[in-house]
Amino acid sequence: MTQPRQMTIPRFVAAKGGDRKLTMLTAYEYSWAEMFDESGVDSILVGDSLGMVVQGKGSTIPVTLDQIIYHAEIVCRAVKRALVIVDLPFMTYEVSPEQAVTNAGRILKETGAAAVKIEGSVNQARTIQALADADIPVMAHVGMRPQSVNKLGGHGRIQRDSSQIIADGKAAEQAGAFSVVVELVPQQLAAELTAALAIPTIGIGAGPHCDGQVLVSYDMLGITSSDFSPKFLKRYADLRSQATAAARSYVEEVQSGAFPDDEHSHS
Image 1 (tube, helix red, strand yellow):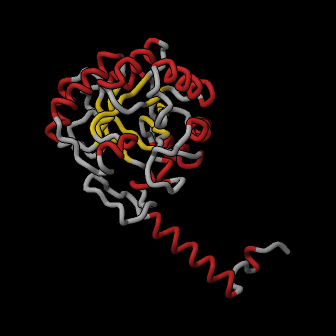
Image 2 (spheres, helix red, strand yellow):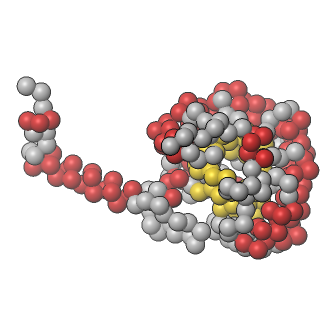
């Protein structure tokens, strides 16, 4: 199979309205990032979702700038062609546009990533513009915003305020964002927003009409608990049960003396 070309910000934007949808997965460490890159995925998001799927916390809010930089640098070492985008964690960009530029600059300098992502649009228009003016590519995020979980009343709540979501998307585009993540909105609204913007929309729980899709890799691979089963999630593997079964076999063989045997021992 021919290896896909290097993904860049201009190529990502130019995919808007094309014949092929954009693809994005999250990654937090070297091996998975390397495999996803080899799979042909267009972009890899080092998401603050690591707070939940890697650190086992109840939300993304506790994730720090140093933690996201640590994971992003590892991911960028593994990736050869996909576009790497990194979340700015909670309270690393909200204080002022200057704070956002400083922290986003750290991410790009210390990791080698191509872009950052921030949640919000109308309320973050000045910040998006400041980042764009500093030549820091920025992706916006509208609809359900995990960092606003307390304000919104919990995870998994469908956002139906069409006037707000359209205004958010347009504000992000006008401020200089190169793309917008659209999370947990009705598919008809996501289609309306996608048609209204000249930049790509990347959906998660927003139906098939966005310009691309993103999933949290641990969810998509079936690593996270089956108790988490939102309607939008499709599990493409069941690695949790496979890994559990493999570990159980290992424990049984070691305890019984079946492993290591002669085949797995040096003479």
